[in-house]
Length: 304
Image 1 (cartoon, helix red, strand yellow):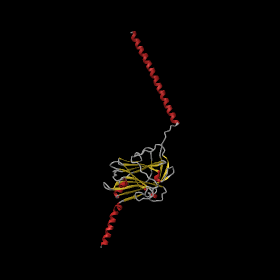
Image 2 (cartoon, rainbow, N blue to C red):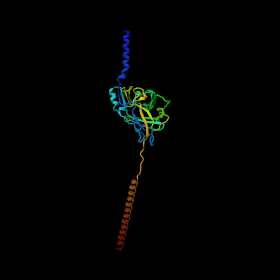
Image 3 (tube, rainbow, N blue to C red):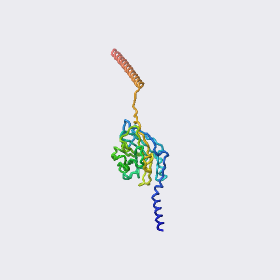
């Protein structure tokens, strides 16, 4: 009898422990493993880490919902976060990948210590070699900010390729800016995170972006994820990351003056000058006539 009771208690405990996992709902895109994209090089305008997307600073990384994995605490929360917008922007130079992600965060909250930031609002960026064969061989980096103090937070859950990086939390290497219900995560990640000594055009890298939204600690205690590619939020597998090609530099339009434009401008200027001269000549004649007329009136007055 005791054995039966013990066995029943064990089954009950397992069921309780499994309940949160079973309660979670997910939606996985049909092309979520190894999506591909090209990221252009840094333009002549450069990049400023300020939590804003400047003109010619980045180009957007294209994706479809088929490249995403959504997860929610329950069906209702899953449906909610599937309505959120997420835009990813990037560029590169020989030393770094610059990444900016803008996502809906209606009620940004982050109260955890850095190592546990994934329980609330944050971004997890996973980096690997494009041809990585080891599922857990990755650099997994987390970025967020304390929602009360605004202090920036960073954590590295995994470090490989002899790469160790602790960015400054003064805003010079990454930023987390929340405005009007949206949060912009912006960062400059050294090429070493991808197992590279330096970047050049044509190189390929492995990249995964996982956005954690909501909180399972405060409020309604509901949280979820929006993940581009797969291999971080649902289990660690660097072989499934997006395969990103480093392309040509972002082009900044240069103002040009054609011969036709120059001739038209010169003609217009000449006409304006002629008109001004004629106007000036007419004014002189009118003034002279006025003087003569005035003189005649004066003479007439003197004779009388």
